Image (cartoon, rainbow, N blue to C red; front, top):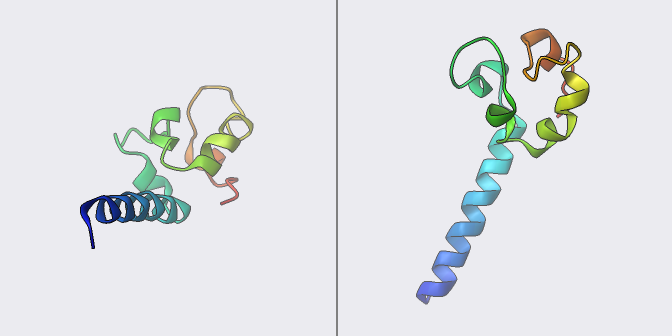
Length: 74
């Protein structure tokens, strides 16, 4: 196996792994700073969550509470 192929495969594997992990993350895992809210920057790990963020943020606080996150369709 040559180096460019190895690096390309490793890059694809890393990207795929992060997408798969994001699909099953809990509120606690996404709330990186532990403040009880998920901010847009914390939500960036999941493209599906980012796409739904504005709809889920019912109080328009620019953060998701546990109650708001519970409506997230993964």
